[in-house]
Length: 150
Image (cartoon, rainbow, N blue to C red; front, side, top):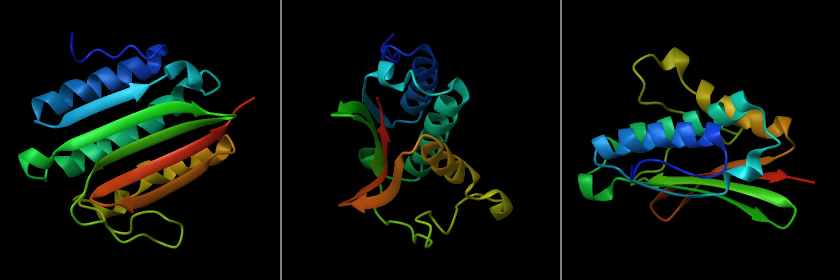
């Protein structure tokens, strides 16, 4: 029951619960502070794609970190007339970014498939008029999105 998430958005809850269980199994501390009702303007598939891709990328990275450093934090909150989404994970060495602001290298075996998840998140953010950024903050890899809302 600890892994169950109750954000107010059933689709988000399903994605977060699945990822939370996986994190627990692999010794990754996963913390979530989210008001899922803020995502009601978004298509179901877009919610699945954003959070599925972002958390899959974070989990993939954290599995390579020392056990004591394995950490993922997700936050969804309202800031005035904006919805802020922030997903961060521990990252000792920040990857090089392209001019488009996306990671250049991948740890995936098939480099041909590299980057589609991140590009998909960026596309969805742009679809809703959001600001999408990837950056480092101390020893954190951060994916940040800021969506305008009515």
